[in-house]
Image (cartoon, rainbow over all chains, first blue to last red):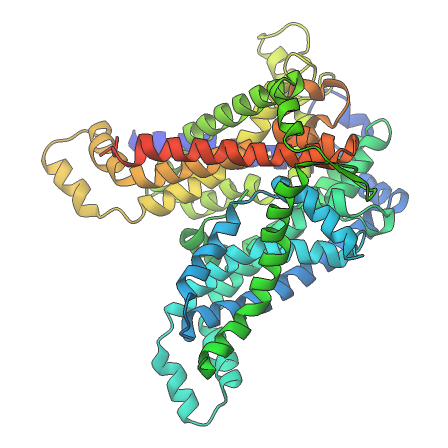
Length: 270
Length: 291
């Protein structure tokens, strides 16, 4: 009896969470005749024509490439900056260190919408409005508090003796960090990378405000434009939805174990 | 300054530069900006002091936005807890396929907002949507419901948002559930406590502090949510039936190009959150209501 109710509740949860995504995939694979007919769970005649239309008739692939570049650059920059920062916060002693760590966490409290206006004016004055650089810098900044705190927690858990041993063996500080500290903090680095990737990949507000050229747009804004352009081509829009979701799901499925660990230690904003 | 302290600051410098330049400075600049009449693109600006704040005090658009924003944040927060906490309790039980289900439950939270929104617009479509089809099949409605029309757009927004964000509650609550000492449950069972009483007297007190944090964070994040609300209705048509303060601030700044007014709205939102958070801490933190 208990078994049955557990599995029943599990099924409800599974359907609630995942069914909408299944429906998106199913719609994306249907020919237009089936999309507007009585709904069927699985396409009768599955087809890739929606994807073909998406790639051939729209700028989707340009948006996709832009998103990959921006998210990739953001992940690299964020990991570099936050590793240095977290290493400093755990390995060097200086006055105000813990106060700085606390203040960094405080910056996490500001929602993007509350600073987007001065942010826009600042970016404009720096002359980098309508560039991918502006997006990369804003995403990096917004990921930093979380990444610094996750990495700080991981670095703290690595015994100093290991580093000292490497230093005694004649390895420099840089090599020690590269060969000893970073590999041991790998789960933290992966959690930080995923968090950063997802934030950069999903962001709508900064991309909407900071980018105006069609050829520089990233996926969320580009797809929203497609959606608003004409009479909605539901098959094609669902195909676009599938294409945006696939990288996230793959990325996530590959390293889910680490992510849940990282979440436990820091929490994710959204 | 000792050498190692200098290196410490140097390593931290890129982080501090980015956070200082792109978060702290904009926040302060925003307060300054809210005292001016400033065009979003042109350099012209004129000092108006607290003029914008006085304007909003009697601005009906502001008050409806505040009302819709509060309803949206309140209702979605309660429903996210209502769905998320039972889901976490379920995922804390041992059964086959649990880890896979834990992964699936996270999906709505990982996908971009644009996907969640177009997906629900399709499910709720009045002519071809699955939801209307099922409702009609079940005989619950005779004519299709215009979910995205003025009467139901708030419902559509709430459904979309709860679906998108309840996984946060699941993950955070589950993380705490996993650290409750099994001895506590064993002791309660020996004392003859039923499942419900075990939940009430062991689980709830143990998780009170994490619930405190979840309620606080989710309320703040839903109150400042921009993309889900904006993407669901844009700026024309039915958007005024769900326009929240973040959307109003965006419109003021980037549609009417009144950057000073938008900045004032941001300051007001921040002040509201500050006051609400202080009240929340006073009410719940000191008394430990669940303990």
